[in-house]
Length: 572
Image (cartoon, rainbow, N blue to C red; front, side, top):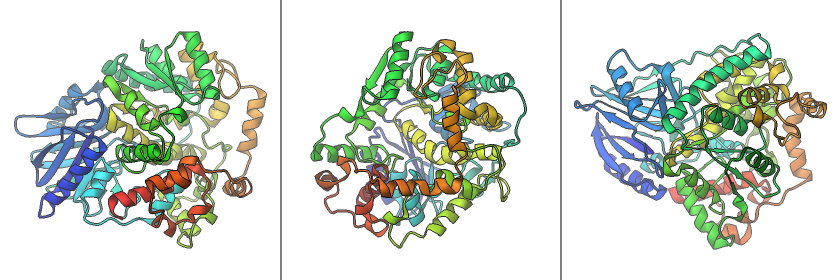
């Protein structure tokens, strides 16, 4: 399914369903259907661009419904759903056999239950009173009788691109956890669904580590190929992750549709074109900055379309020329699955930290301090902001502790960044058609987080994966200034170590210094007549949270204006 909205039956249900249906249609969902099930109203719609069978029902009215992209025992679509229902009616669904990014709703003998994928990559929402459940934030928000902004959620989204710990930008909506099995009816009793994960370091040379990771990657990509064959769309850039995806697809006999985004002189574009020419791969190059018209009226029209299609508040914001929407729709056309390399960071030293213990505060200083408090109003309390993030990051571990081991630090990427930031983008792509971040799977993460840091440093491990799977692809240059078929040069290692040894306290303030002394100029679309075209009444809501005129970071300003736009559309 592309969309589901589940609303508890009652006097307010009809109005809520009507509002959710109106939003669904504005978002681009068609062929909406409605049914009553177990004391709830269920609204359904297929994916916007490439529908796939994602509902299987027996003669007695028992059913399983998957939103997103789900594999089960290596099967996809109808065969997977049929087997899930069979198992659910018997000994139970085999959680370990579930793959993908999805929400799974089951109705068995009058009982409704809902789970999401094991790493929480499929953003799914519920109201705090448990009366509204949906994979669409805007549809769920429209169904509510009240909508108020969460200050912490607003600041997290504008500064970080996502909200964390299950919060959203609204106090009335939360994001579901992968660690619970939600019993919706006949009673609201959740069951814990613990994810078993060994976070102790694993010994072994590079070859043995490669073997373990390559085994699970091969299994996962074999399922993708069985389900889609050559109907695969993936990016190609100058980095590691897109090249690893291409290597794995070629190893399984698939020639995907390949694209690259950027200007002609962009390093990623140059590398991608060199690979495509050398390997005789058809490459689609799209310079998004040249998409459509650039005048204020055109930007306002594109912003409106992207707001609805992107469910209100995507990680990059909705202000733009429409190129992001056009390219996402193109990737989903003709039944293709869109693959994204997000999550491949688990194969590298993503946080650029040395091999010792760190506190949660160190992690926040290292990666979650890319903001300047001087652009906020007195409503922002920096200490409280960090305390909330500290509690949210600590919650991804079973027990509270003062220090994180270096392997636990590695898990912060998939368990925190990947779930709440990468996951929202993956879920959004799934509204258009099948989509996966194939490296963001529990069986991959289990192996990757335990790879010794010495192998991950300087991209050695991921480069070796590429070279082992597809030596030809490894020989091409990269944006790092070297190919992947040999050890990284001394210049690369020295550059990395200069970052490794930079203390977290210094990283915490580096953005603020740079922003204050080298103020960037906001993008044209975000200021002046362009802004007035889509926000003619200014920014009265966001002015309560920010000194809007002081914001010069284009990425953060886009998200700030996105929230103002959302408040107008939702009547906040």
